[in-house]
Image (cartoon, rainbow, N blue to C red; front, side):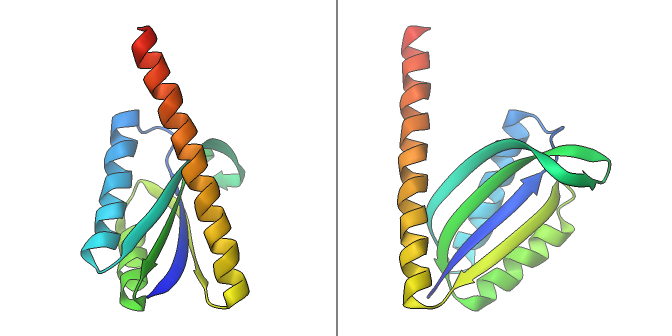
Length: 127
């Protein structure tokens, strides 16, 4: 299986629940087509370089995964027909140097998601 990183941008008008559903749907597409999700990163709402479909901002997500090549074809097909995805990019890491860089990014994403989980738990305990 090859190493991949996929970044996609959702419309900023979606609610948190709708964004969560879309993220789980994309993860399901990867897993149902033989992929293994290693880490995910919620980058958050960012300003776009230029307006896309009249949107100035978008919610960015990154998923690091291992999968056979047919999984990427299906994932990109799903991106194209999903109206709430306004942009996407998938990168394949092939060389040993690239794979080491991919592993470092995965570790960073896991640390960031761990910190955000701790923050959520602290907020829940305070309330």
